[in-house]
Length: 137
Length: 128
Image 1 (cartoon, rainbow over the protein chains, first blue to last red):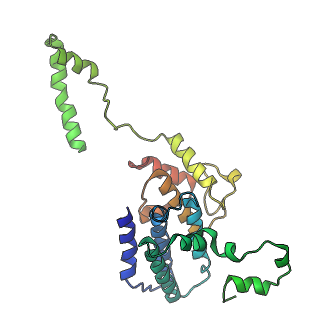
Image 2: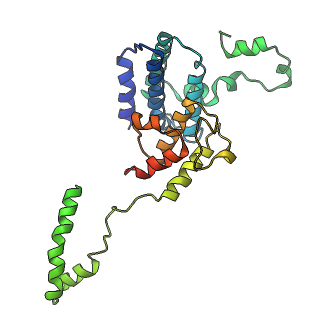
Image 3: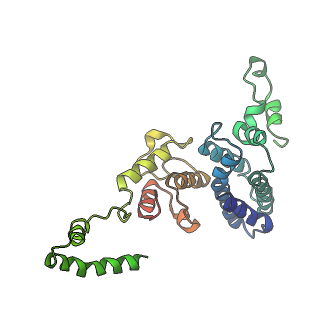
């Protein structure tokens, strides 16, 4: 199962995505999402995440990462993002990352690390909150 | 495999018609008694439709973006539950995990409601 997940992600790494249209890019995105979801059991086994998170939370994390770029319409940009995503999946499945990377990046997620619920942060401006989230807003 | 099973079943018939005639030996009595009960067969090891429907509905209800009170066996994922196509794919992946299946892309594109999902899984031979 681990080999199949690794082989599936390896297939994406070697082939350069070159979508002719938005529809083709969209189909590739769904294919990437399915490959990632099918590798989730392997990832949980490699990094021993059984007590920390369950599969549906990881699926939601992956889909929210994809949804962050849902507004993009240029097929070349989508291909580039898919390439980065495939590389990331490959690194994770090949155990090049470590447990704290996965927990910090996908279990706790973007909001968890910098989101502070203390009273001192409630008055901060939207500019700062957006800035913590990403460079481009 | 199915042909072999059918052939063996067919070849059984002459043995069973002989056993009332030669009723002395022990093995032939055992044959006629236990011939109809197959202890090691998984032929009718199929999931029942209510079982499939219950599990599909529980998977859909536990999806974080779904309101559990709106989920019925006829509900359509995108038009009734307000999900988008990525959520549709995610629900299908959750169903794949629940029933230990792998749904090919062509079939997966057509499934966009609870009814179709229940039907597909019920008809799938590998569903467990």
